Image 1 (spheres, rainbow, N blue to C red):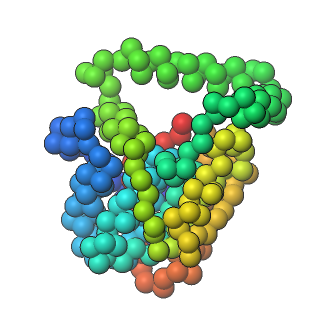
Image 2: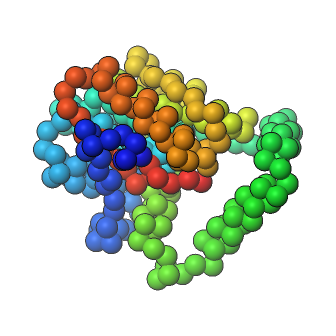
Length: 241
């Protein structure tokens, strides 16, 4: 993503360190994690305008970071959410009609991918799920621990109304219960820019898709603000689920 955006727009990845994780502890809220990240952003670049972005749970964190920067009087030119859900509007798949719709989706996706690729995806999913259950804290990487902290905090987060420019990049191939657009329309009433990418969530960071997303970001950056911008990403920008 950084390479695709280009050298004209410096790109910073803001991550949680081991010391940050120890300070925040297991009961961290998304607001406290975002406050930690805001301090790092201001230390790296004391004044805006800023472009803040993230993918999936990292996008929810980016939303809170941008909200805190704006509340502090800092200029945020653009908030980029890459296939990010609004946690307050997540739909469950518990009802029978939704389960049937999801089953039809899985059948269609399996026919598109082929049996071999589908089995590969299932194997990766099961491996990651059981590895997470069996992994001890000492064997988990710092990045994995930080991501788990962000994901856990994001689940209980309530998005407030946001008046700034938002680019919502969505995968066009998604299960019927994972339509993220209505959730963001509810809190971004005036400047929500929507870009669909012909891909599944897990394929959004493929080289071709990343180039398309980067082009959309840079084009919109030129539209919303003519000043030099710096793209600051939360850790989730590179994460696939």
